[in-house]
Length: 619
Ligand code: M6R
Image (tube, rainbow, N blue to C red; front, side, top):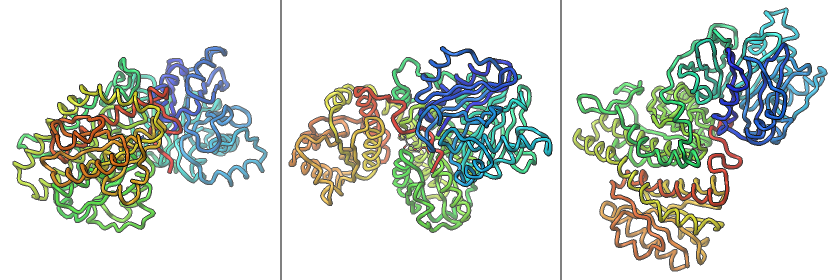
């Protein structure tokens, strides 16, 4: 949440910062602001609303020249999305500017102290108090070394909560100082220029060389130098990495929406998520597993954690892990996990799924698991992010950047990673024969074509979106792995079309939800393959009849040639035949397209739905 960019180099900082913000706007779009060190003072501008409001205002006002600057795009926490609450925030004398991502929990007491000390607050934000705390530290400067970094280290030690802070000060020109605790910050290392950002997308068109900033560290970037220290002033240990995708990957490439592009990219993303998973000897290898076979053999229970779409991927992972690896597995919402007093031992393996690798609910959940001595394995997309850094092993998705707030290609590649991990566990523990694993891998390798085939047949889904765009409510039903797909379909529709949408396990219908059925209500049903799951298939056909008897309009996703279910479908969406466990890879796609189309028809911003942000870095 909130996108942050800092720049020190020889280019005009404003252009670099605005370009970075345009790539980070998906993190929050309630307001945007910039500050540039210019001729011994700080020039700044900020506006409520999307970045476009700020860029229009900047066109009409005098230029902000200077080669050191910072910027922010906001997802509001403290205070409404107004001009005064937009970042950056300044101190009383306008000597420094600061931007922030996160929540400062001891906000109230610090604000009272600062007010009592005569500071004038002009916003409702928790961020502004950091500007005033830095002001006091800089005023006391001669006692220390007078540097902004020293002031920042000192202020950070007074803050409770989560934060990424980035600041500039006229008294310490040439440097941008960033700090982080439980919120993301990376350095981009260029030639004679350096960057600070919430994620690498901000500087990818300038450099692919990046450095992870660790927990409780301060980074100082100058044109030719990067220095990292811990909050206590000792040298900070960091890890360099190279971004493995290009700037073009973060462009729309002719699509109207990033989401549409990311849906279309799925066959390739699924294929790439499988690359390099098999060694020369035919055995599965996982690049950053870091857990030994012995450790994996000692696992007696698995807990999969995630939020939103990642949680739905986890629900599907449970089926694969229990079926293939024969390890008892449960799935929990990361946001609920540590408050449920979970039973964790050193034989418990916790698998955290997160596209961004920064979701704070998930990060806090894995910290809790680590404290109880459980092993943590993460399934993440963004390299250098916090969750993989704090895990005992990682399976990366290799999906490239996912910019649209609604998760699509990350979901499919999370599923691939889960399937591969389940097979890897089966290999290590001997719960499947090598030829069975090889056959399952062959089925996975066929999935990019199957997803492509689904995408080529989206005409009926688009037509359905046109017909249903005016509906107030849509229900989604599924069984087995179709149930999480139903939940995912409902989540997509909620977040993009702001429609009431609910997913149910079809068997639960008659325990309550069937009361919602009324004539004409659209109900989407994910049908299991008839030949491989005949019992469940028959049951869902009965469920469809039950809702049709009450007037529901049935939209049935079913395997091509499924003649048993076809007569009960008002709209039939055919899926290519795939093994039952892998069906979510094809069944989720029409639901993504449906939600994207409905939102577009309704005139919503598909990539930046209201109230949401891509990376949820507050609890
Ligand atoms: O980055 P993460 O995978 O940890 O994000 C988890 C959820 O916030 C995310 O999947 C969210 O539900 C998506 N917007 C759904 O499309």
